[in-house]
Amino acid sequence: MKMQVAEVVVKIMEKEGITDSFGIPGAGINPVYKYMGLSSIKHYTMRHEEAAVHAADGFYRASGKMAAALCTSGPGATNFVTGIYTANIDSIPLLAITGQAVTAQLDKDPFQCVDIAKICEPVAKKTYCVTKAEDIVPVMTEAFSLARGGKPGPVLIDLPLDIQQAEVEFDPDTYVPVTLAAPAAKDEEVAKAIDMIANAKAPVIIMGGGVILSHAEQALVQFAEEYNIPVITTYMAKGGIPVNHPLNAGHAGIQVGQPLGNRVLQDSDVVLGIGCRFTDRHTGAIAAYRGNRKFIHVNIEPKEIGKVFPADIGIVSDAAIAIEKLTAAAKAKGLTKFADRGIAALRTELKRKTDYDCTPIKPQRVYQEMNNVFDDDTLFTTGCGLTQIWSGQLQDINKPRHYLPSGGAGTLGFDIPALIGAKVAQPDKTAVAVMGDFGFTFLVEEFAVAAAYHLPIIVVIVNNAYLGLIRQNQNYAYNYEYAVEMKVNQSMMDYVKVAQGFGGDGERVFKPEDIAPAMERAKKSKVPYIIDIVCEEKTDCSMGGAIDNIREFI
Image (cartoon, rainbow, N blue to C red; front, side, top):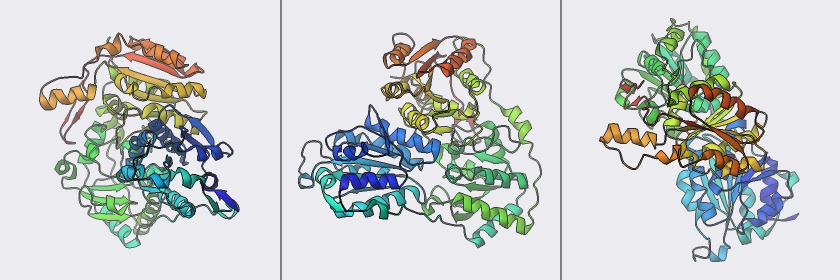
């Protein structure tokens, strides 16, 4: 049957399981929006194009289901870039659709014509500009296959206006959704890995975000339990093993790392890293991180293995398949339990202090109160800065897919729109964004979107009236301070009025004993709610350049 390309796009989205989308309509994308309005796909109109991508990103992180982000051409499309980069580096699949000028005007600089496919090419998994109507079905099919397959990521499809309105033959009933085959570990590589672990005295497992993406965290914890091997979680795998599990060794790293994780890693001789990337904030100085340890690296993407440093054994595999094969091989070999490493006692001994009672409030106290007030089903987002680092260090998360940070990008402004997407995906769960006073002003307009769609999100502002992370870097790396003080954020700026002006509510907190009651009121509120917590200005955050040289601040 004959059908406009715009309708084909929407029909394929439906067939591929897209149920929710986030975007802003405009002249360049209106043909697609016509059919969006006739479809089963729910649409949420955002207030900024970047926020639409973050919302689609947050939706996937909370649900494991892809969403779509849509916008018009020109500056609308270029506003997508940061969101696409944020999703791509964290391996989050989503479909981005942008409008474009008619094909006859491409490369002629008409109004709001920009080569968004080329602009996004370095930061997306794949981009397309469809210039032939008959290509739309194979492009859409490949886009969904690439987005979900291998190391997942965002794909962008740019649609010229005339192509959207062109007619093609298409029967939705004959369209078959994409099916994927995940790469599997080779048996001989798995056998070598188990041999290396068997010869270790103190092995450790690093659970990366790829384990969470493969829904394999329980299988990995069971493997660890069988052989009494401690588990370090990367930042992207936070929540993959309960906080108080006797084998949970916390995080390792130079920023969101913890003393426990760094100690356990340094005391280990063989490291089994699954679904991780060994990124710089995790490893710090490579020489200190590697030491004399041997590394087994399992990753679904071949390019990730050996990218940062050579692995002793590299295994290209989906995490779930690799864990299944490792489990079978270990059993066949008769691998026995390793000696207890005393993780529970170390956890208590090395725990960082949070129970400050002073005024102004120490930021660490905020995270202690969040751990006490919010239950394990709460969804959290966070973006960048000291607030994000403290969050990674101090927040207790006991379930996977509940801690949803901007990991690799550290994107200011990610927090609120990503939380909106997460709340749409999981409407019955409490949803909390943890952010700084400066970061709050990035994409703050999306708070109005939450109000408009009756999404009672909670925004916790750790207000230290500084660009805290940059102040700390200037101070300790360069011995100066400039352009980072923002005292007006605790005086002239009134974030509660911002919340009320956008259709929500909120309150400002000055005393540590008032934090928990404010959070309880926010939970009971039926509207988006801001808690602006006025904190000590120059609290430093524990971090360093190497895992054996972390500077602790108390």
